Image (cartoon, rainbow, N blue to C red; front, side, top):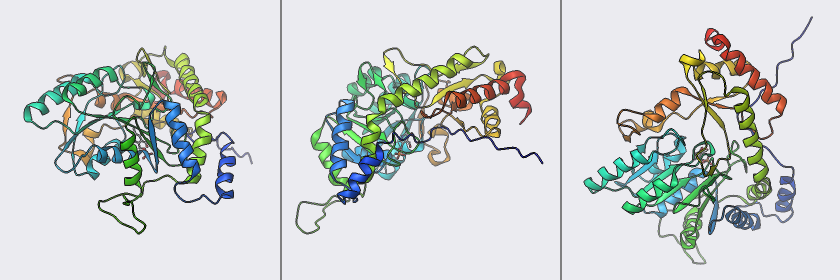
Amino acid sequence: MKTTVPKAAILLSPPHMSGAEQHYIAEAFASNWIAPLGPHVDAFERELAEAVGAGHAAAVSSGTAAIHLALRLLGVGPGDRVFCSSLTFVASANPILYQGAEPVFIDAEPETWGMSPQALERALDEAAKEGRLPKAVIVVHLFGQCARMDEISALCGTYGVPIVEDAAEALGSSYKGRHAGTIGRFGIYSFNGNKIITTSGGGMLVSDDGDAIREARVLASQARDPAVHYEHSRPGYNYRLSNVLAGIGRAQLKVLADRVEARRAIFERYRTALEARPGIRFMPELPGTRSNRWLTALTVDEHLAGVTASQLVAWLAEDRIESRPVWKPLHLQPLFAGARFYSHGIREDVSARLFRTGICLPSGSAMTPEEQERVIERLKAGMKSGQAAAGT
Ligand SMILES: Cc1ncc(COP(=O)(O)O)c(C=O)c1O
């Protein structure tokens, strides 16, 4: 009897180890620095700050924790407003809820898929008139592409509102010669398993404000006051990164530039193979910026392509290829029902359109050209006379 061997799965963005991680882990074990904190943590903070050109960095247990600390340091509390990009993962906005503040969502714009300066301007104008300016604006650099930071910084500067850059997906990306995450008052990165480099789980808060970063480390360590015994005068968190994981991060950071090159090459191969197909548009790259192309994203115009983005996701899954829709905008999530939302145009909800038409393709830096060819051929077959549509 003939047996068919199932095809290997191709994942969206799996971890990609360099091999050197074991050396750092062994060092942590040999010195018995297993607990949170330790020499790898200090070195990882220093090395990351240097790599991105930030003054200071605090290593923490996740990107979400880093956003939470940034909001706490900015004094966000109950009754305050925080503006946030709508087209993002829920982790960008959850810390607003942790602080008991009110999220206000700002639409995306078509050239960066990041925060729309037009929508932000309307939101800030209105908030100023109401006398309720936000305590912070969280700007997300989506899939590695930087948002329009010049326009956003100018608007926030006019109103005196600090920016937190959510660069969880954008480590290694740059905006006009500056690293993503180093333009606002605070920047955050994620080292979650699916990110461009990973510690299995972890994050980093960066800023040029050394006092704030020192305070972040205290808050992340249960806010212990200086005393021999355990003295506490305000609430803190258990957010520090372990020395073992920081060791993994140090090895990963050394290959960051290679990982960016690999993901950019993957994006280019997809683009070369598929760009001419009717109805297909790849995520743009704003002039003056360099995306790490964490995920290759594109939109599908169903009238021209004959299939929808969600039909293509299902079609790829049938062949054990993992792809994903673009993030569902936060203003459309049940969790944030009733939250204010400012659209890009008066009647133009760009993030909802990108959600409806967008798809993220497998983009792992360890993906082989043969695997990518399999994805491309499957996509072509799905688009050809709407086969993916017929199959669903
Ligand atoms: C845009 C964005 N913000 C925040 C996060 C949260 O990072 P973490 O998973 O490390 O908490 C992620 C990813 O997980 C993300 O994609």
